[in-house]
Image (cartoon, rainbow, N blue to C red; front, top):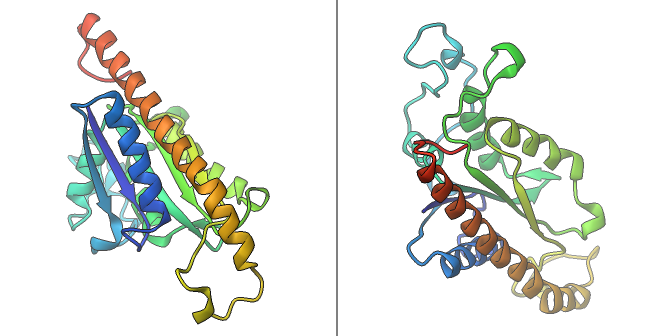
Length: 229
């Protein structure tokens, strides 16, 4: 089983990374032979979609593929071969991070064709997961913005399962920063009480989807098929 985690956070050991690791640990606890690869997008130099439309050219080798060759190209290849694809990002300005949005443009637009019904060109309809971490409480989650991105993920692949960490503790030492709109003590209390539960939710989802992916593979073998449903 091949699990690819795309981390769109600049902090390799921050809240988003911890949620990703919890998901990975859950999957491995269910499938000890699972391979998990985490890609930190901030380590890759790339840009978003350039609107060249090479992915829409009739009878072209680039049809349904991003034609831009750069540091993101091998990452896209890995993502498209995953049994489970995890897309993780902190929420900045009520949306996913800029590098995560650029990645989604390059991943999804070539596969969302202009054929009748906007047919998906994905040959691997893998299980997908979205992980979000945000500095706001649950009631302030930018639901519509996230739903828009997840709509495209679901159209191209499958509707993602979502897990979130809310009201995140941002600084190791709040005394060093000018922060008047948040109560550090309240945030610390939430972090101590709720973040472990959010990590467990990610862990449990990893276990659940590893089991589901393995069941699909077994069913596929019995039906002698060579691609995911």
